[in-house]
Length: 150
Image (cartoon, rainbow, N blue to C red):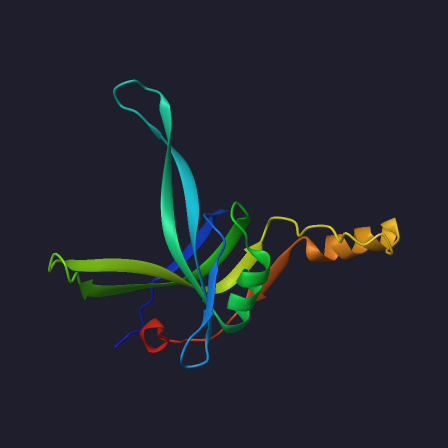
């Protein structure tokens, strides 16, 4: 059987600060949402209307720690990951529910890190530090199954 995959690449803004926890298996996990925007033409008025889509994002281990420390509400992020869909039966309605998550394998933080607030660092040194911290790319090759984490 040939191998198949579902992969996503998202450029958007964090919808809130990540929720970070350590699972009972000892995995670091960060969950957050990312909003993407596009303009669609209204066929009746001819005007363009903004449309926002929300994506559920999960990061593990070192990527989770980077997300915990560096991603905040409104930050612009570019990431790549694999799609995973889980399903369950709603206890109240009895209906089958679905959720699709993007498991991060690579992330680029596009919002600059805040400048250090210490007056002890000379301006040129602070500029060098901030330029080194302004963008970060982290990659993870981990192939964890999300269902085994929780």
